Amino acid sequence: MDSQFIALVATLVVSVHGCRKTELPPISHTMFPEGFIFGAATAAYQVEGGWNADGKGPNIWDNITHERPSFVANNNNGDVAADSYHRYKEDVQLLENIGFQMYRFSVSWARILPNGRINNVNKAGIDYYMNLIDELLAKGIQPMVTIYHWDLPQDLENIGGWTNPEIVTIFEDFADLVFRTYGDKVKWWITINEPYMVTKGYGADSFAPAAYLDLHGIVEYQVGRNLLLAHAKAYRLYQKKYSQQKGKLSMAFTGIFSIPKTDSQEDIAAAERTYQLTFGWFSHPVFVGDYPQEMKNRIEQLSRQEGRNTSRLPPFTQDEIDEIRGSADFYGLNHYSTVFVAEGTDQSSSDPKPSAMSDIGVTTSVDPRWPTGASVWLKVVPQGIRLNVKKICEEYCNPDIIITENGYDDDGSKFTDDPERIYYLETYYAELRQTIYTDGCNLKGHISWSLLDIFEWRDGYTKRFGLVHVDYNNSNRTRTMKKSAYWLKNYIEMHKIYYK
Ligand code: BGC
Image (cartoon, rainbow, N blue to C red):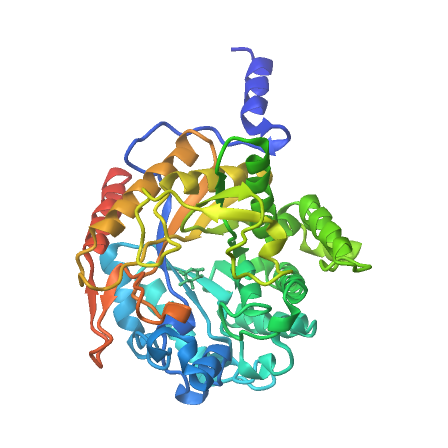
């Protein structure tokens, strides 16, 4: 073949519409490509316990569960949880037994900085995560560290939490300490877990701090803005001070993933709007720059109809747009389920108006045939995860993608017998392989949520996401692998044997 022709073919493979395009690997119906990462995840408040151990300060979940116990099912709280603060070695042993190559966990801000600020560092907290990281590395498991997974130090909430613009530099300082302390050992970072869900603790009472309820429709966007700026500051700081550590950073993005209920133009537009006003709210500023145009237009227009002079969505300055744009080295996707959406306003909805939710202006529904997890919102819709990944490839120029959370919950009644979770994993994996082999997306790994049964926020211990069962009635918090953990162990092992 003549060399000019080869060069032309090469260009066609790597460049489609100016975006990077991967060469499709050979089709495999059962396995992911060589090097695909399998991991499991947890988050500090959901597993650690030790809520006031060794100098840890209180956070918003300690506070709300103690002040308002009925906020959570059965008055449960995370005071002890799975006791991973004392039992982390058992957790790492389980990760090794199942064969995971990565563990995504979060650092508890108030365990490291009891008041949230860097003038008071808790050495015991620093040591805890150092020990955990060392234990992982000794077993060849890569840590992926989430810097913020929803457990804001109470002292910071007392100055307005994520509504206060001061939080941006306070978070940057915290991130600086974490990068400086652990950065030579940690190569994967998630700055903030699901900023979209964090906004639901403000203006709505889905999560702690359940505050500013009367500012719904306004406060969510202020909080979202501060979350994006805090993330970008941490990213730029890492680039400036720690780039020699060669880590990769992202957020764990989420939103409402939907399929149009009918093929009418209105419903197709409704699904697109749902994407842009949830996922796009955070991913578009990071991967393209600024909020999605549709989001800006929609909230501006609604604000005018409400008789306001300015949009409820506060704009970014050009400098802020530039700082946020490009602040991710991969796309971290948390995906569980999918809904149908149709154009129109849901009259039966309890969402306050205006609110970030009602601004979308759609009605959601599900197919009654979809199997369900213990959580009513968790419908098993494997095709949705493929569409979500594909949307990311198309929307953001085919970035590297890691599924940073994905999993299924049971109600614990069958102990370790969980064929439904195996079905979920198997069907979602099949669709994910298609995103690689058929759609050409750069999907690099899958992190199961969660390693253990966890404290499931407002649902307490009534919903169990673990591959490993935790006995909350036993003071040892006995861990027992569920059938799905054995299934996954074999599946990962098969890859190791094949690619040896
Ligand atoms: C959160 C987890 C949570 C999971 C299941 C995700 O939104 O990051 O903390 O346990 O969903 O609800």
